[in-house]
Image (cartoon, helix red, strand yellow):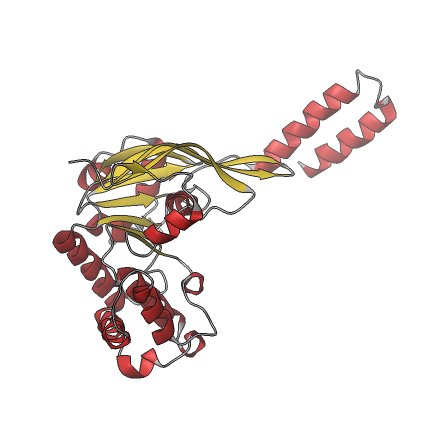
Length: 317
């Protein structure tokens, strides 16, 4: 049986005045029916752009420049907007990190949820409203009938996120992409949402891609984990294996940076391990030195200017 989703050598570039930003640079992965794939990595590693590209939601100056996105064995990369609109929400749903990317601030919640149902299914208004109510109950929203008549600004940030999750689950999609969906939720509701998506994957066979920074959440949720860094997947293993025997130094750094209960230094405090990087000051210093070495021999920089700049740099270092 082919996987629900197979991504092959996906490249997403942003063409800016300053140059080309390779936000996603040759990413490949697949997720099968009922499987949960976790994608982890630091901010700016390309996780969210990868998720958005699967639904064709990359806006200019961004563009998918290469690769295939095979959903249910059909390549949907570069499909017309009309075809993608028929897929979004019903067959592939996405939970955004910011719920206001899903919710319209000037429409009541019931209007938005009923529209999300009737856009893909021929059901009555009453039946659609009943499904919307049940979805709100499922994500832990009290007084669902009252909340259906409310506007998004009347909800807290966590409640708006729960509404967005409820909308994504309305059609029990074949593929669900969740981009940091539980960040704004308290631990109790987070646990409830995680249990619900696990149930959805197990009972309906929904393939789930869970994008997160939270390694603790992904450890108990995912079957496999892909670690992203600088637009690429640097490691991909089963969840148990990636925590027990991480292969890539970046993965090891992510795991080692987690706080551990019971560990204390000699001063009574726990020092968190950091992932070492390049000192930006040294980069600037080195580039300045290279520039000076180019300019002086060319005659564009005299000895007097050379000495002034050199003394200024030396005093700052």
